[in-house]
Amino acid sequence: MIDLKAKPFYLTDAQVAWVRETIAEMSLEEKLGQLFLPLVFDTAEEANARFDRIGLRPGGVLLRSDTAARTRERIAGFQTHARIPMLIAGDLDRGAFNMISDGTQYGHEMLLAASGDPQMAYRGGKIMGEECSAVGTNWNFGPVVDIDFNPFNPMTNVRTFGSDPEKVREFAVAACRGMREGGILPCAKHFPGDGVDGRDQHFLSSVNSLSVEEWDATYGKVYQALIDDGLETIMTVHIMQPAYTRKFSPDTRDEDILPGSLSEELNIRLLREKMGFNGLLVTDASSMAGFTDVLPRSVAIPTAIAHGADIFLFNRDVEEDFDAMKAGYEQGILTEERLTEALERILGLKARLGLPEKKAAGTLIPPESGLAVFRRPESAAFAKEAADRGITLVKDTQGLLPLTPEKQKRLFVIPVKVEPNYHNPEGGYERRFVKDLEDRGFEVHLYDGSAEDNYTIGKSPIREFKKRYDAIIYFMNVASSNSDSAVRISWPGTRVTITMMIHDVPTMMVSIDNPYHLMDAPRIPTYINAYNSSDLVVDTLVEKMVGETPFKGVSPMDPFVKKYFFNTDK
Image 1 (tube, helix red, strand yellow):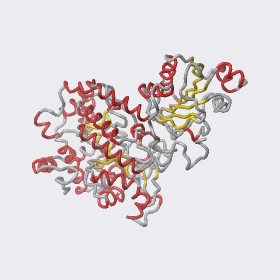
Image 2 (cartoon, rainbow, N blue to C red; image 1 turned 30 degrees about the vertical axis):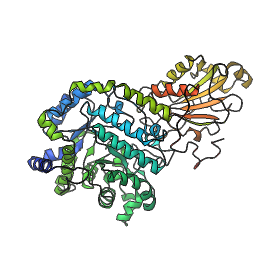
Image 3 (spheres, rainbow, N blue to C red; image 1 turned 90 degrees about the vertical axis):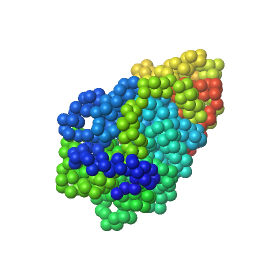
């Protein structure tokens, strides 16, 4: 039996009794259903009907973006239908808006880290928690506590607090405390730690290749600090950690090493036994290829729970996955003992949140009046402060800034990868950027890929170009999309837009996403990182470019990537 009175549950005798009595009353099908947390796009009524048809009573759901009012209504539909109150999760990296379109978008972890102040992470987490709890959300799959060791990694990048393990630890603890105080429970991810490999678990099981000693001194310190501080949940993901796997199972062959989502060595031996984590473990999305790299899906599903996870996240086909979990139980892959442990933690988390008491009192769904939280001016002010304190002038070796219409009136702006994609569904921030400049008296030509533009930037005599334009600005919105496995520059116009005139025409680059573009354009003389794609960040970026406000951010990682390159600071 799990000690539900201990950290991080701290349950009362009455709450422990509710957990164990509820488990005792459940059918096997209900027990197995609690292990599932599907991603739901349709209405509560449609999803409930689909789950009812196959006999699934999921332990929770995760919802994607909608308005606050409609999100609250959907959550009410799920909670009203459920006999056992549900975990309602969000996957929120940069504010509640990822789940609630009315929510505050205050920026990626790296933007907050560039402020140098962990209180920014705390305040952001608290605002997120207050907004999410106002609609009935009670759990966030965040913060990201990975360490951005590898600039080629498409998953970590601006979603981390940087490359310094100590800074990551400080900001992660602060973010979790803020979320908790705001009314939702945090879930640190991605255990056993992303940011070493340069690959993406959506496409394969990636690798954290650190030695045991290196892991203990970096990721281990981050997770241990969070556990000691009372962290309730951790996401175990499709990343292998060969050193620790072999520490506990020395004879494991390369081909038999399992990723964290499936690894008994990492989840039970390392996280539970060595590090003392008593909270709940949830797998990362099982719809990723990294989950089925090593095992057939039908085997991997029950194995994830058998090897230490408590909740199975998302589905390929929910009915087929539910059948696989039932078959795994019947075949003995998932034992009754391991199932009971998982249920105690799932229901223990629900009791930790006070869900049974809220259900009894009819307060599982917050009052509609609580939606006023989305109109608070102080939340918008915090988002502005995050941009103001985080945007970083990395270098200006040519003394170009501030830009003024008197010195650089005519600007040639080259947008790079600004089209909408999975992680940036809006796109089009280059238009905001251009308008902000034009509003300040600049004449801006936005490169459009036409034959005329390709000739102008790539083939015209430099002396002719200089008669028409005073400066070149590369506007970068390069982020990993749904199918990309890298975040690198793909120069528009079949290479005609490459940086050929940096010694002839004042040239600068600004990035509102990936902060490592000096890998591909090392001699760009003026370079700015803004870490987050939003209208507010673009507006604040332009304010700083023209000297209306000073640059305050300090890079929380090495933007010059000196580990791989040289002279990027020249």
